[in-house]
Length: 196
Image (cartoon, one colour):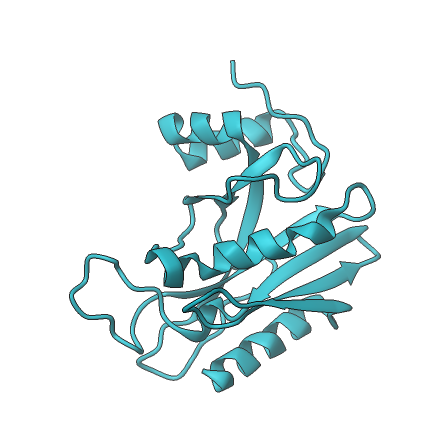
């Protein structure tokens, strides 16, 4: 487990630079989850990445036996515009989402919605996120077989109306709607996209 997480942190550092802050959260009966913060001054962004979710593979909750080696592994990455909101308060909600495979037995994959039931940061219009396709910002990390690669899944904050619309129409349709309206998904103060 420690070897996997050391490799994951090295991949995050090579892709995002040195973290300027980190916080750790431990939930009863789960492994420790850390959240690392990376500043991208050139792009005016701050990025938050979980570390610890990939220590164990995610298992199908209906499976009779959880294989300790096989199964998808992932970490979560959230990018927001720096200085527009108190987004550092997202550390605990991110840790909650990263612990959900251990706590609730969910398999987090692209297209999924994850809800924390409260604003992601103070004053945020978002209580949930859409899990996007990996591979753009941080490349998958290959592990020695039979372990599956670690995928770094981007998170896109959603308003409650957007989340409800996505449940009916699907993740691809919501992403097309955002794209069609030129929605800045990194803006922590953005308004909901028109869903008419």
